[in-house]
Image (cartoon, rainbow, N blue to C red; front, side, top):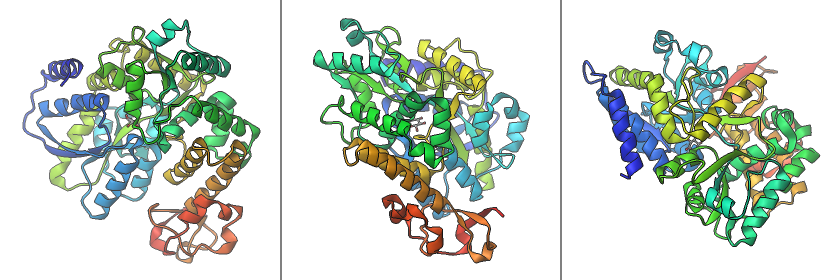
Length: 478
Ligand code: BGC
């Protein structure tokens, strides 16, 4: 345990020492993907807190930033009839599990603790399903951040870039001085994380809404989208040769250690800087992706609570309640790099980047410039998100020109939507619209007339394999 982790653990223990549990509440098995140094330090805050309440932690870590692998493992666990008590989850995935009837009802504890009043509406739309609380939000992250090495910036006389052209000029200067300009890990979710902020910077909030949330084919196929892809290609030219497959926290280390000038990543990266003993303003800088200032592309980690047997229920409720306590929200988020999921937590304990994160979130929420992150499952369902991932990463790796990427994107998104919402099988009522229950199942018998032009896209073809049986579908409209 390094000094900072130790300090966090000690201060957390002190913070919760006043709580004396009446009796042991049991055990929680928790599936999550917090496996980097900074993430593990934050997780310890949660484990320690629960231990003071007599709740034992059974760890189920599944490495892989963004949580894709964790969601695959989860599916297998639920299918075998033995879900974990609590699962770290993002946005639309939570709603999908709720729609499958797999999640527990937290309304009693939520009402007792007044969650409705303190959790921002943007988060509640993923913590509640048909008026039932099904998840406890632990934080709010945002993806449109840049993390920079201050020593390199000072040495080269650079100030924080505020426009795309200034960013490119700074990257050039860093390159000329012999550093790696942009630390990046070549994994689809990391490229998509950058894409959130680049789309926002290229097109502004209305465009982000139309393209990434409304999935409007015109916006997806527009000249503005081509500019966003061009910018991604420009960024690709500032990445080192060994970027492929690199984990995000190793890219953060390159900035921490002064090999690279910047990383574009969500504010979980700050957790890595802090875990390495670095201070904002002294060792590193945090600023918004140029062009995206004034907007926030957010994702919130929530613990989705699964329907479990009665004997595991007490510990589950204790965990949900602990997560929602204001003291915990502070203790956890100052370590994690995120900001609280409650609106009534003061910013006093947070560092300069945390204070900025909280102020940005409040301002964006006020002015209507707070949007769900596409990359982290808060703009569209997983199938659509994955369609974006495929195109963004293929383009980043030079498989498509920007023109081709735009065209592929329109087709891939249409294909994913077609699979997501189709004409219901006869048993559910002809002429109604259905949404797949289990997105891992593939549709085999979609009638030709429902295929449309999207049929041509690769993403559509690879996804086109699922049994036509009423039990695979929910009716969503008539
Ligand atoms: C999660 C963060 C996590 C990051 C990298 C994001 O999807 O919201 O909590 O640190 O992935 O693993």
